[in-house]
Amino acid sequence: MDVFTALGGGFGVALQPGNLLLAFIGCILGTAIGVLPGIGPLNAIALLLPFCLALRLPPESALILLAAVYYGSGYGGRITAILLNMPGEPSAVLTTLDGHPLAKQGRGSAALAISGIGSFVGATLSVIAMTFLSVPLAKLAVAFSPADYVALIAFALSLLGAVSDGPAIKAWAAGCLGLLLAMVGVDSGTGVERFTLGSLELLGGIDFTVLAIGLFAIGEILLLIETRLRTEAAKLGGGAKLSLREVIFCTPAMLRATGIGFVIGVLPGAGASVASALSYTAEKRLNGAQGKFGQGDLRGVAAPETADNAAQIGNLVPMLSLGIPGSGTTAVLLGALLMYNITPGPLLFEQRPDVAWGLIASMYIGNAMLLLLNLPLVGVFARLLTVPAWVLYPGVLALSFAGVYAASNSAFDLLLAIGFGVMGWLFRKMAIPLVPIVLGFVLGRMLEDNLRRAMSLSDGDVWALLGSPICLMLWAMTAAALLWPLLRPRRV
Amino acid sequence: MIADRILGAALIALGALGAVSAMQLEVPFAADPLGPSPFPAAVAMLLALCGLGMLLRPTDGFAPPERRMAPPLLVLAMLLYALLMLPLGFLLAAALMATTVALLFGARPPAALLVGVTTAITLWLLFDKLLDLPLPKGILPL
Image (cartoon, rainbow over all chains, first blue to last red; front, side, top):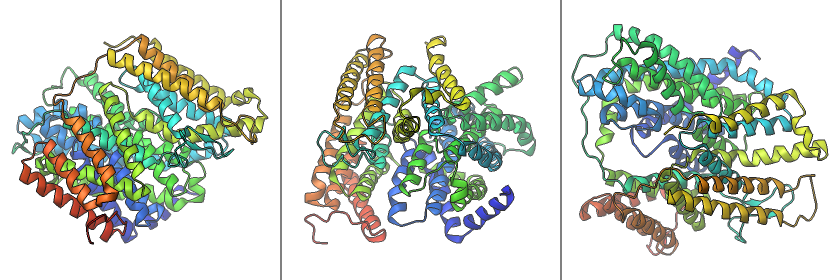
């Protein structure tokens, strides 16, 4: 099918009034949760999912809403980074380096404007790339055998250690834990109970929303409550507005950042934080001599923000085309689709073009909305930062619990979510990354199912796992990704 | 250092238990040549191996909380909520929890009470009335 016809069909879905409204709501929510430290797209989507199911939103509408929250959050993190010198999102850390100095020099509004434009450029160019790349990638994957999938998932998991900030062994441990959590419950192949500890509530397995809300929402609030809170708010600054010349000056940096961000995003495992860090470093190396990086260079704001949004969109490509999420948040989106009985992957574009192309078309519209929302209304979003923590977080916590209960109707799941919350908090304090847990959890069943299917097809011959050139290549890449953290020089 | 060691030991124990429990599964019939045991057993052993690595080469320490009492109190408030929600009902339990959390985040008592009650009522209206997701009524005549 021609890409343009398919995209046209997608716009037919995305332009329906209800879906336009959902995209708009998602964009506002996304920017808002991006602004607020402690609430990220991951827990916001986990919280919204029960609502989507309860309201019986059709899958394409739910995905349009949830995805808008996801890419909208990439616009919000910069506001906090620039005004408060603290990232609203983990991937906005680099934006603080030049963004906050600019705000102190009275050029906060210019920094906000260029980062908003950068976010739009990065996201939109990446959506265009995604439009043309998704179907070829999906076609490639249609021919994948179960053994190929085993190798692909193993590769995606192996990258977790290679791109993690901390020691690789901690990322691997977290990934194994996620895989084991996915095994809890009745095994679908044989009806055997695994790891249920005799509990009736665990027979059906651990609910995905319980894990995500526990680890990320509850764990984050535990982390927030133990630190003394900052109160100083920042001003937008009345300095010179962003000029067209400055936008043109930043354009090459934004284009480079889009390329870096999108490629990093498509690779499984590497997320927006890696992309924004890489693009900032690249700009500093290229222009360090004539720039004033670290003291308020507009390019130092534009590059990481552009890369951040480009990587977010890039992350969606393997999720939709291969069914393999590359980041924690896309894992949650995948979990959402699975709850709708829709399996992303090679067949999605043929079987449910309304879902796949509706989403892609809505991202063109959503990013245009976000640009319009974020340039004039940036002050409104910035005001969110003046809401005191004691108003915000009790509400977030109560909403988390109400969401968990609404999704499962079981008080047991509330206790389970608290348990995961405490675990997430302790792990964060010990530099154990949480994203591998979610990825392992989502990929666990998929990995095991494909492994067992491959073994059935080969009648138990283990060598079948290495039976195709694609397998061999992917396993070689897996081995490289596993060895890399062991060989690279230790960072102190 | 010590935190990494403790967690490493815990992961070894968890991995060993998981591997043993997976290998002891009694499979009534084998639908596929692999069956339900080997994969979880292998992952559990990998987990134990990672735990061993953390035990032998621990890294940076565990930053003690700046406010030592806040996290345990928050956990206590959440547990109370989970246990009280069915008998007391969502409104009372959520109001109690939200008030406590607001206090822990440094609100003055009257403001905390206001936040707690408003949060509970707003969520009740949102879930129970607007979205038609029933929450437990408890002892309140609603």
